[in-house]
Length: 206
Ligand SMILES: Nc1ncnc2c1ncn2[C@@H]1O[C@H](COP(=O)(O)OP(=O)(O)OP(=O)(O)O)[C@@H](O)[C@H]1O
Ligand SMILES: [Mg+2]
Image (cartoon, rainbow, N blue to C red; front, side, top):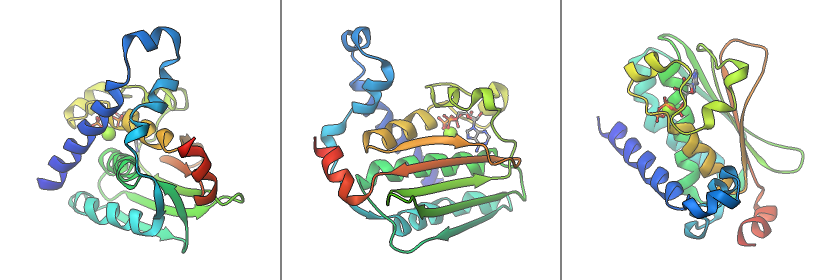
């Protein structure tokens, strides 16, 4: 399957980019999280990115996987939501999260992607599914490399436990934030927040 192979290549590319900057000397003096957030920053080319274009591209690329499971994959996308980010790394993050949503949600399940703006003008991307969810106690741990909630299930589905670590690196290196939210409904709700075009100019170039 070509899209899966491309995704894996992209996953590994992002992983090695992040991993290369994790030098053992630095890990002694700095928190691993800080290093991850800085890794590969100099290779980014931030520019204003239309969230509608980005989300539609990723959704259409992965739609075949949802169709194979008879899932409903829908979007609700606001006009004119932009962020100043590096397109390729953010595409990788959204792709990893959406891929998880489809993979871990049952057949006939529902996966939604929404975009919106915060009051401060930051871009929001919400990826919501009605699958098994991630227990609250594990919601921050799953961002660690190789961490999987249900190891037997994940291995059966071919997961390496890297997708979320890469997604977090990709979002944070662009000055954004990523977290799982509790929306009091069964399933998983992942929110990515990306800096607005004007604010990001200072954030990324400094
Ligand atoms: N939408 C989701 N619903 C339920 N569980 C999830 C979801 N997203 C992630 N998880 C859990 O978080 C774990 C870590 O996800 P991550 O994407 O980092 O690794 P993976 O999917 O196992 O492997 P990889 O992405 O490297 O192929 C998963 O193994 C799964 O247990
Ligand atoms: Mg994954």
